[in-house]
Length: 335
Image: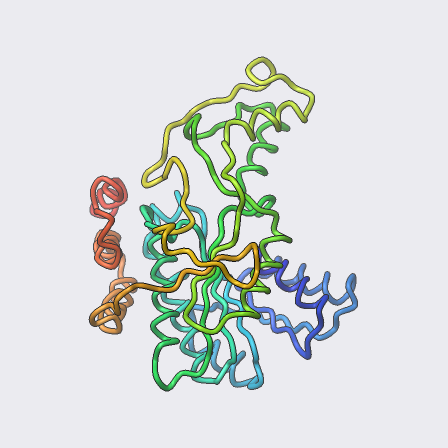
């Protein structure tokens, strides 16, 4: 993905003994390996085509084969909010349960640091995607808190990345090129944006200074009004908004926030040693029966009952309610 590929570029630039690349998608894995080896001259890249949800595969093909792994950057996740609303089983499997599997393997094999790439949508989550990523943060925190675990676990949370696959900027550009209306959900919607290079550079900084158990939040600057972004992009294309290109308002989608937030409570932010990285010291109480509840979530994810998964996700995030946030998805699942 966009974040994972940029992590590879910046790590290769700094240099390391070995860089193991794991991806389930063949073409992106082929492309980043070719770029690292052929274009950048970094020959220590090892591509592994595998599914991070498969614990046995990860154990035998990654952690047992390369026993001296020092750092794991876990960037594998489904991210498209509307898709995850309709596919909560996959959100749980690929986001939460895969994160637990990789985190537990990292702990078992004595990896020094584990860096989870998180998202602003994990703050007070109102969508399946956000709930699944919030659960990722809790899982790595809980695993890192086990007395026998020496691995330092940290989550790094940030907003939208400019130019990533499926990003709003790319969608707007495609709509303009095709002569179609630009579609956005609300005229006052705002989002945080950062370049992929800047975000990944800060992720590496956060991973380097973590002590374990933190949730780091990147300073994303001021939120950007999506309407302004759309209008500016039309003007930069030499066209006139409203005359040459229509801007069409489609309405907020299920669970979508008008404005994203990076933290649950701004009062809980603390400065770190880096001016562009804030730290949230966890004030969460341990989730009673976490292991058992995650086991129940895993068993439910093996079936096909979307409504059951949605109820269990909401159970983890009591600030959310099944209706109306996930009512539409629940109705679909039960039909």
